[in-house]
Image (cartoon, rainbow, N blue to C red; front, side, top):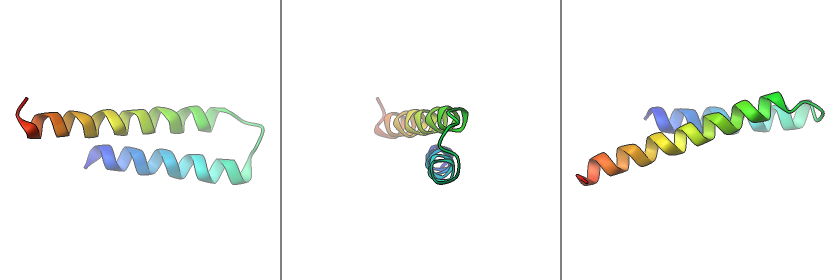
Amino acid sequence: MLGNLALVAGLLISTITLSTDIGSTEPHVLAGFLVATGIGLRLEAAIRESGA
């Protein structure tokens, strides 16, 4: 659940800042970290669920 939330937050931040501020890269870096964290959390949950 937390992984999904991080993914959605990262993609939302990226979408909002892309349409409003083209010159700034800091929000996109934050969005990238959130997306990467979300993917990692989802992978960890999948591994734990499979019993490996």
